[in-house]
Image (tube, rainbow over the protein chains, first blue to last red):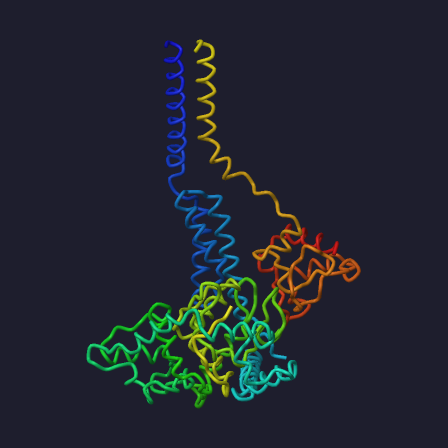
Length: 109
Length: 278
Length: 124
């Protein structure tokens, strides 16, 4: 009986510790980094304007669009590294699409 | 400064002459037909409407069998109901077209000088709705516009494609569609022509590549194992997506101009709607 | 149930509980097993070589294609490995009208993935 109480106490206790730890981690995340880093914010802005330009030029690739969506999703979770990674892909794929639209036509020979 | 101006003038003239050198629509069509004839002398011109099936007697025989009793007949019937149901004012779609809508689809798309734009058959159907007090259908909606065309276009089965390009506005729209067809797009970097001009009749993994002339004659199509309804422009959208390009709007100016060019290249070939395709 | 046994059970349950908390995060971070050169070559989201190239010496390669030259005797055809790498990276450099996608230039494959494909194709 007693041993069972100890066991339950241990279980509940460990659960509380885990919960507190999880909460602490989240608090630390939103506390010390409440917003996106300047770098990530700028990278995201570059990607968004690149995709907007490619869209206006009717030269947007699906890869640019989906990378931008991933960057925006990462931004919601303040995941700076992921924002930087996906924003860079989006910006590059957008600019490749625009360059392609100015390229030569095929099958002209 | 003077030198720069001179160079710019030269460049401008070069650009102009390159533009002037682009082929007339009819020359472009003849070139594309002749190229297919040279590569495949045994395939008759009128069989270009079968596209990829023209290269495979087996696949063509299967197609003929299926078309004897199309498994998607009930879908075409839904389209017939849409076509025959009168508007609130008592008028019908048939009242909007000469001959009650028989043998008209081969005249679309045409270039409308007043509106200064290409008008597709789908736009004409929506115009008919608007003229009779009905809200337009979304052109990408296969359950309304798709089904309506799946019946309405069958009224033009057998009509020869008869697209006209006259005047500078029409020519500009044709050129815009032409440019779309030959421009590489998407991460995979294909133009429409990369496959359907440069590699006609060759096999992409397991599928023959159809020839450009004839490609617009058999739409809409019921495709694949589930007979999904595809209008021509839905097919454009799917193709663009496959090469990883964000598709244009179905019913938008880019695809309308593409359809104008594309349909002209099928001139002289007979229409047949609501067919099976892989 | 004896006391020591109960405590051991409780501790191990706690550990299990902890593991259950931690493992989803670990699973998300765990890298996927790296695809081989052959897998990259066959995968139609990646190299998709078989869409356009037959591989007459490779029994696993299922394709009817006849669009581009079959991939066979590659080491003899490309004595300079860099040339084969360059062809896959951007085939439009050698032939502006080619239908072959520029796998490296357009970011379809990473440089590391192209190297794996080159290694695989080189053995064909």
